[in-house]
Length: 434
Image (tube, rainbow, N blue to C red):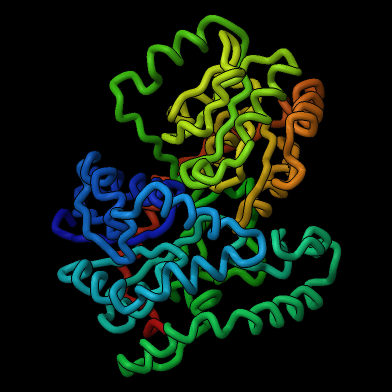
């Protein structure tokens, strides 16, 4: 057992990296050799926790701050963002990603893939290596029985009221509309002598042997049209506590000397395209007479210096797992990692989603009774203050958030996922990957 080598490959933001670090650390503790293959940008993040690293292109580590901000801005575009990421950022490096991953899996016993590592299924089929796929949020399943809320399709908020057959027809047209995006994937398969395979944006991302749904059963329950081999694990939590105390001394003192604050954050990526979010948030907190913590990232332009005071403070970063449980509410972008941390903390939340899975995550948090939502275009000091007043004054949100938090705290997503991974290691593949 101890000699077995497992390669985990991912791409994206810290929210796309941290779940795999959590799994890699647990696998290492169980005696396996765990390797994370991802963007060179995260080399130090991975090696800092004692996990082996292998670079996978595209490599964005040399981008200037201005270039990185422009990429984030284009990526978060409500209409064209998803197409930009897939067609302009990821797929132009597909052959490079394939070559890098082929190197990474040499001598490996198992490959674990992120949903948009399009080279992953190809490598699995070409090498025959056992393969486990993962999804980080329910939207990846595009279920007709539990339809997602899509930023580009406002009517999708009402799809839950439709018959599943109608949703299937709508999804079929949606899939046809984006099929041309994957031409580079199909061409690479042809070049490698592989059959066309399933649609790589949808069914083709899922391993025929095991799909790990890395979220809580309370966030989304299994549906008839999910892959039959899906295993819900719970959220695999990981938080970067690189400093010895986790929270800085200044932040700890702030938390210790007053009422629980409202925390405002945009995660690790959207923080680079914050616009007036932090300014409007600080004004809202001031209008409400509430203490506030602004997590602004390493972006000096995000800090509303004129509004900082003994009650409103700004920090680059703080571990969510240590900060959120001490907050009165969390205002965030709706990324699955941030949403999961807020759910586990038992803290009510106000979500202002950008794109991708964020509108769907926000809708699910709303349905759980722990959140309210404001669209990005409607977010300002006045609207934020109004929503936060409702969130903080209606005790049902706090009670429900506490109850949900206890349910999620009782899960152990990392252990459940690694148990399933170990079981998969001991079973031969049922089918040839396609």
